[in-house]
Image (cartoon, rainbow, N blue to C red; front, side):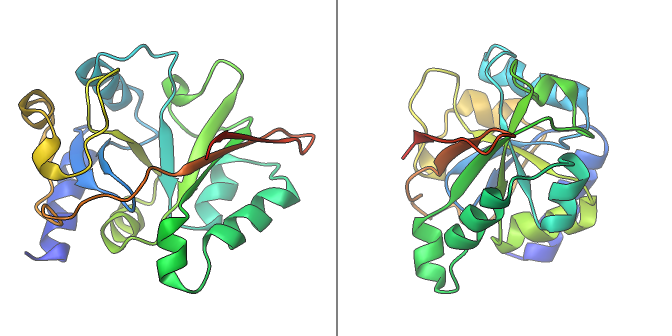
Length: 197
């Protein structure tokens, strides 16, 4: 399985407004270009999910974060540094999604009603390199119909989801996922609220 070939295949689909099923640093995700509202709408439809339940966006570095958020509370960087510990085993146990206020340069249907957006920085090679190629953030939402349990491995993903995407990445299909990320909400006045441990 050639990671570069998979990145190329996924990129071609995403570039043309398609949606992909792919392994992330946590669970298998459904993703698309986070700046393309039509592609985002396809994911909501596939998951049978209300557009009011926003999805998170993966990013691969500070530059991407600054492109989406103008004002980033200092504490956000501290949390990201903490969850990106150099000991990769610890970092993997500790993926953290941050919800920040006033996003821009992303599809409007990704933004929550309170004008916030959840993001996660990823180092996982497939996601990281795919975003390098896209030069855009990548939507990530669990690969299940809304309200059903989150699949822990590729085998648990329902046929409806697999048939509903435009491309299924052929990597890490045997891997059993760790726990989903911790979710922390930060408001512009630096209030911190843990939403999911």
